[in-house]
Length: 422
Ligand code: PLP
Image (cartoon, rainbow, N blue to C red; front, side):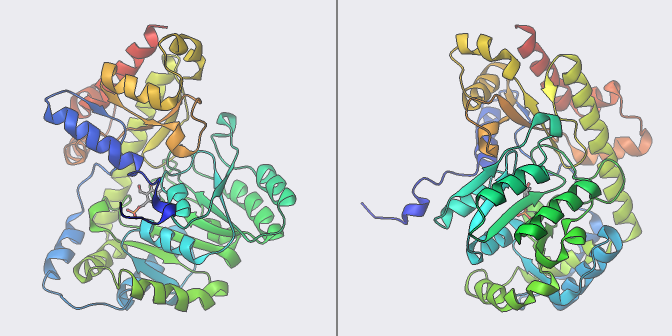
């Protein structure tokens, strides 16, 4: 038997990727499945980015580990113009997805990591892979599972010694919540008081249904906020694997450590992809309108799902951005116990097998195992077809959903029939 790093012994494939494989397997057996488990953007990559990639396909040079200077400058300009975040290209770092950049940052930082209950699946395993544990901070349904300053402050008062890093994500996966300016300001005050480092995961920044800017923690707590973003969600280019990280000026002394670690691990992101990303962050008018339309569509689909489920007595969070909402079946706990279903994992298997709906169990998002909460991703539709249909008719009603998002329609009907038995 070969011995492996004991920090990695219990590592499992990421839950989202695992459910995707399961759905693929069922679909290959010709079983109809409504895939509410995977959060990939359904829209095609905008042609200006595709052309940028094609035109640079012959570029075979390694680029600097921090990333192409023109791209870093273009991202800084984009952040200034479209996210109201002031920075310069010197403080922008390019990596193969924000996931890798988050992991490298976690590797670099010492101390305790804080994760609000209802956060992205990969933060915890990344921290565990480094050989340390993380702390889950409590959140509640009533507050849309957003972290409150009181909870953060109480934890810090009781645990005042070690350096702390909070991972905050808005717009949020899995809840769909967007933190308001006031909420971020109040959290920033506590972070300041306790000298907390914040990893602000803003990968869904432009997917905000209020058509306002998603506020960035870096505006309220610039001194210790490291911001993360990338091509995957806003530009529908997850497979391009390009993300960025912005260090605040006050932490620029960490730049050399980051660049060194990058150069010793991934070297630099693929050069054609970096050139293509310049086209993305230039945000020409057509790209701006594409992002706006995609957000309007996601907003309307989320509203449809939320209204239908709520009317059928399924408790769910009302999405304000991203691709997700949380749904809560705790009110059926006693009836489900009679069916020998005790955990969210049990119930996700039951719903997939009996109702052909793939949902991710809340236990993957730091909820207790017996808390019957699930993440529903409402992006199981053909984004290209829906964009074309939306151009002809921007009224996304039940008929639109039935015709152009049939899996969303049928999946919702299946969930309604699941609860009708109780
Ligand atoms: N952060 C959140 C909250 C996500 O949902 C994802 C992807 O699912 C990522 C980060 C990673 O994105 P990428 O590595 O594609 O930039």
